[in-house]
Length: 88
Image 1 (tube, rainbow, N blue to C red):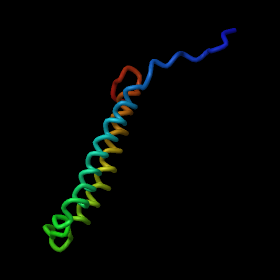
Image 2 (image 1 turned 60 degrees about the vertical axis):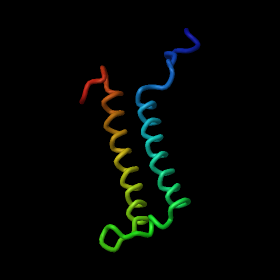
Image 3 (image 1 turned 90 degrees about the horizontal axis):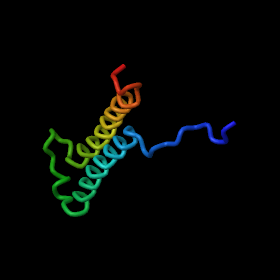
Image 4 (image 1 turned 90 degrees about the vertical axis):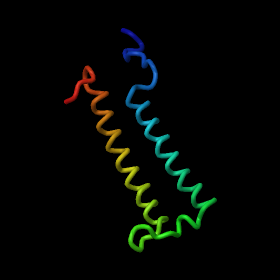
């Protein structure tokens, strides 16, 4: 009887790499927002969207981006992890 019956893992899978890539996209978006807060708060106080200032709109945009990136990951991971990499 073999002591280790599990196959060796060759390293992070494609789904993991996709997840990290999407994570870094979000980090760049977030730090762009933070850079605006730190260095150009006057830009965030403008109201280009009918009374809603840019700070609120961009904050909601970050939330929407996080939701969108999670859906992209969910779809990409399902395609990558399916047998043969084929769509289900």
